[in-house]
Length: 221
Image 1 (spheres, rainbow, N blue to C red):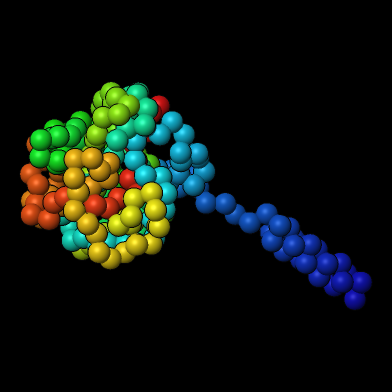
Image 2: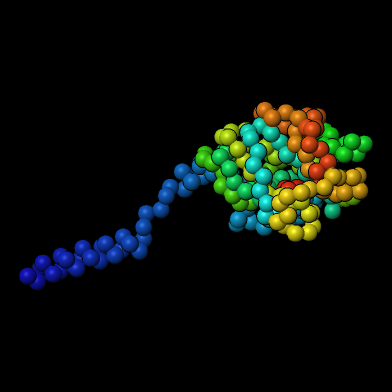
């Protein structure tokens, strides 16, 4: 009887030890699954921001695969862009393409592609803030207007956070006004709805000059 109690206690202690120190997933597996994903939950997401809207706007706008949405921003600082970010509302895509464009001031549209960044996951990208390094590091100048565009290239749809009252209420979800050159924040869609890569020269869609802002931004190193 005494030996049975000792054996039973040893088993209990061993199991307790297993519960205290559960097996951990292999580091290499985790690294491989997230090798190209850059979620900024563990890093400061508003460090050295050069332009854009870091606020989590409370409206969401669904877009089909291949249709880009671009928002304009006046740079608040001079510097070199090293990353592009989005506060993403979610969708059924595992890849987002972000791009930075210069401004066509005569037509109030994006102009030439300056940099591209990509967020890729092995499954659908969930809502949250994502940052990705740019393929080039263009210089931006305080007081000048630039555009950030985003589109998804896989799955069926993706949603972006926005508001129709830039700098005002975060949840003005209907009834945007028209943009004029004095406005800092305008939004438009690409002419193409089947993009696989950012256009070198932006082709504006028909719904231009919308006074609204998306939760997109660009940061320095």
